[in-house]
Length: 161
Image (tube, rainbow, N blue to C red; front, top):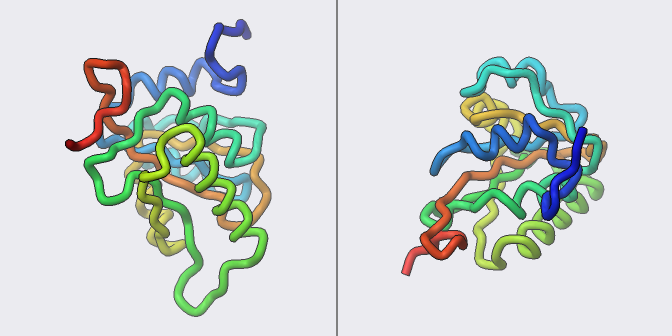
């Protein structure tokens, strides 16, 4: 595998193809190692096997968001898996979600809206995604969906006025 200047080496050729092939409004699921990625990936737009990244969720999201514009025209452009009603988020889950939010704020913008999606609904939303990226994240609820936005004429994320 060859490296490219300015592109994080964890971003594989398959993932770069997916990011380039996605259009405005398409969604990308980035999931933990316990997520049923192979099964869910069959229902995605590409229908291909999940792309495997051997890093934790926050590192994967950070590298992906260096290239992928987020959709600032949506109420939320990042979603994370949350427990179903009556189940408390474990401390490790809170930690991974806090790191996800920090990664998004660092590489995108602090005004990106990040919203929870109940666990079983998250599985259904992941099936509608363009593709699945599976990480080596082992903490519970280490799953996110990113909504692709638009790159404006100036080469930056397009935002509403």
